[in-house]
Image (cartoon, rainbow, N blue to C red; front, side, top):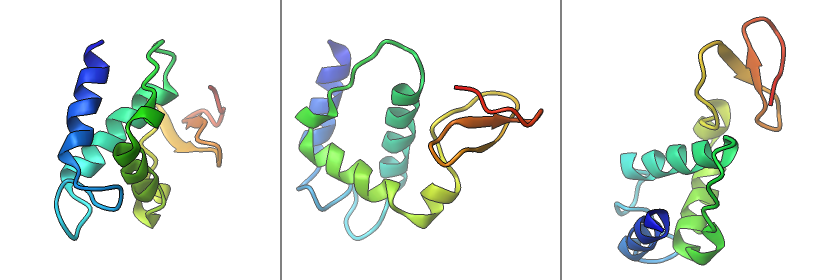
Length: 100
Protein backbone atom coordinates (compact mmCIF):
# COMPACT_ATOMS: atom_id res chain seq x y z
CA UNK A 1 0.00 0.00 0.00
CA UNK A 2 1.43 3.38 -1.00
CA UNK A 3 0.00 5.10 2.07
CA UNK A 4 1.92 2.75 4.38
CA UNK A 5 5.12 3.38 2.43
CA UNK A 6 4.71 7.16 2.74
CA UNK A 7 3.80 7.03 6.44
CA UNK A 8 6.79 4.77 7.14
CA UNK A 9 9.11 7.18 5.33
CA UNK A 10 7.65 10.19 7.19
CA UNK A 11 7.94 8.39 10.54
CA UNK A 12 11.63 7.72 9.76
CA UNK A 13 12.19 11.45 9.14
CA UNK A 14 11.21 12.30 12.72
CA UNK A 15 14.05 12.12 15.25
CA UNK A 16 11.86 10.90 18.10
CA UNK A 17 8.36 11.01 19.52
CA UNK A 18 8.90 14.46 21.01
CA UNK A 19 9.99 16.34 17.88
CA UNK A 20 8.44 17.59 14.70
CA UNK A 21 10.01 17.84 11.27
CA UNK A 22 11.98 20.96 12.25
CA UNK A 23 13.60 21.51 15.65
CA UNK A 24 12.08 23.76 18.30
CA UNK A 25 8.91 24.72 16.44
CA UNK A 26 5.66 23.52 14.96
CA UNK A 27 6.52 23.61 11.29
CA UNK A 28 4.44 23.92 8.17
CA UNK A 29 5.31 20.29 7.49
CA UNK A 30 3.79 19.29 10.84
CA UNK A 31 0.57 21.18 10.09
CA UNK A 32 0.46 19.86 6.52
CA UNK A 33 0.69 16.26 7.76
CA UNK A 34 -1.95 16.87 10.44
CA UNK A 35 -4.37 18.42 7.96
CA UNK A 36 -4.07 15.56 5.51
CA UNK A 37 -4.23 12.77 8.07
CA UNK A 38 -7.22 14.26 9.90
CA UNK A 39 -9.00 14.89 6.59
CA UNK A 40 -8.55 11.24 5.56
CA UNK A 41 -9.72 10.05 8.97
CA UNK A 42 -12.82 12.27 8.99
CA UNK A 43 -14.08 11.45 5.52
CA UNK A 44 -15.70 8.19 4.39
CA UNK A 45 -12.85 7.33 2.01
CA UNK A 46 -12.31 3.73 3.08
CA UNK A 47 -8.65 4.40 3.91
CA UNK A 48 -7.28 2.96 7.16
CA UNK A 49 -4.05 4.74 8.06
CA UNK A 50 -3.09 2.46 10.99
CA UNK A 51 -1.30 5.30 12.75
CA UNK A 52 -0.55 3.03 15.71
CA UNK A 53 2.22 1.54 13.55
CA UNK A 54 3.88 4.97 13.27
CA UNK A 55 4.50 5.99 16.87
CA UNK A 56 6.46 9.16 16.09
CA UNK A 57 3.78 10.44 13.70
CA UNK A 58 1.05 9.53 16.16
CA UNK A 59 2.86 11.43 18.92
CA UNK A 60 3.46 14.46 16.69
CA UNK A 61 -0.18 14.64 15.61
CA UNK A 62 -1.43 14.29 19.20
CA UNK A 63 0.79 17.18 20.29
CA UNK A 64 -0.27 19.42 17.41
CA UNK A 65 -3.95 18.55 18.03
CA UNK A 66 -3.58 20.02 21.53
CA UNK A 67 -2.44 23.43 20.32
CA UNK A 68 -4.94 26.21 20.99
CA UNK A 69 -4.68 27.41 17.39
CA UNK A 70 -5.56 23.98 16.00
CA UNK A 71 -8.47 23.55 18.41
CA UNK A 72 -9.78 26.98 17.35
CA UNK A 73 -9.44 26.17 13.63
CA UNK A 74 -10.22 22.48 13.09
CA UNK A 75 -8.89 20.91 9.93
CA UNK A 76 -11.13 17.86 9.92
CA UNK A 77 -13.35 18.79 6.99
CA UNK A 78 -13.20 20.92 3.94
CA UNK A 79 -16.49 21.31 2.22
CA UNK A 80 -18.31 24.33 0.81
CA UNK A 81 -20.77 25.80 3.26
CA UNK A 82 -19.05 24.63 6.46
CA UNK A 83 -19.00 27.57 8.87
CA UNK A 84 -18.05 25.87 12.12
CA UNK A 85 -17.81 22.63 14.05
CA UNK A 86 -19.56 20.88 16.91
CA UNK A 87 -17.33 19.92 19.86
CA UNK A 88 -16.91 16.43 18.38
CA UNK A 89 -15.73 17.81 15.03
CA UNK A 90 -19.05 17.42 13.19
CA UNK A 91 -19.30 20.24 10.62
CA UNK A 92 -21.99 22.90 10.90
CA UNK A 93 -23.25 24.21 7.58
CA UNK A 94 -24.31 27.75 6.76
CA UNK A 95 -27.97 26.74 7.14
CA UNK A 96 -27.28 25.93 10.82
CA UNK A 97 -27.48 22.16 10.49
CA UNK A 98 -24.82 19.74 11.67
CA UNK A 99 -24.18 16.78 9.40
CA UNK A 100 -21.75 13.90 9.55
